[in-house]
Length: 388
Image 1 (cartoon, helix red, strand yellow):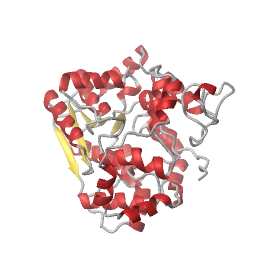
Image 2: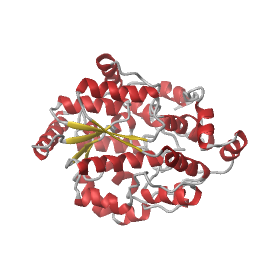
Image 3: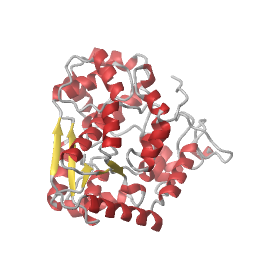
Image 4: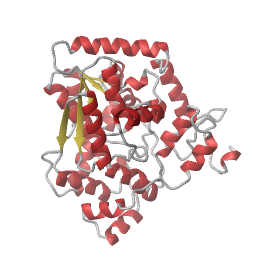
């Protein structure tokens, strides 16, 4: 730990430190999140013969359920590494995916081109849902005014809803998601919460535009998709051997795919969130998720990861001015909001208590792949309130 040159208590296996919400350390200094990763690897057989066989069984289920239909699975796409590689993987396993994209109208040109290149090369159809840009901006503006961390929460939830809608429209029972707890970890919930009620409540208090085109996932819709439509969420990277760096090199070589400079930087509001908003207003830096994963996987030493974590994040030169101009904030208004106090998600209405009360139900649904296991692990247990 001395080699990291810090007075903070840091996990002896990754670089999560004592500032991470709900973190604990064992007698060897290993954090509870590293233990969680090991437990998931054991459960899913990640990267082993057991995991490959489990995923192959799921592939056969998908093919059987999709027999006679044009598509047998949905793959959400952003133009990023994981979702782009997931398209290739689906075809490699003999599946017939429909790519689904939620356009929050903040895409970078690189991400748009990446989607086009991969889809054309693999001959995959695209279903795109474009939200009204004034509505999208009004939601973002509302979250910024609310002083909460989850400024881009509406995008993540909308993509999930849009993938469900596309699956329902085409009679598809499986959604493949490009999340890997090996390469990303499972983000601690502290400043990273979202649900439909939360989005609705923030927008009702701070918004100006009626939400007509935004695809809101309410609690009842969430239950409908998982319990009645029974659309399964599958995360192939939880089962198979997946290496993000190798995947990126493969995409660049095979499809002239372009890297966009960092995790989540393929979308401009996500780039603002990761590079400017939470580091400056909340003194948080979610790069520790990816960097800790690289340490656990032996791709970086703890010293190298810690050094990178303590350097400023990559930020596009014109990004801040673009954010202020697009959302209508003067320099003075922006500085005032960024310098005033912060609020946490639990200070606004959410479904969190309902998720906790229904934990036994969501455990069953998670084990049946009808809700993501990460949702169950993060949202269905009480957490100690973070100290502001």
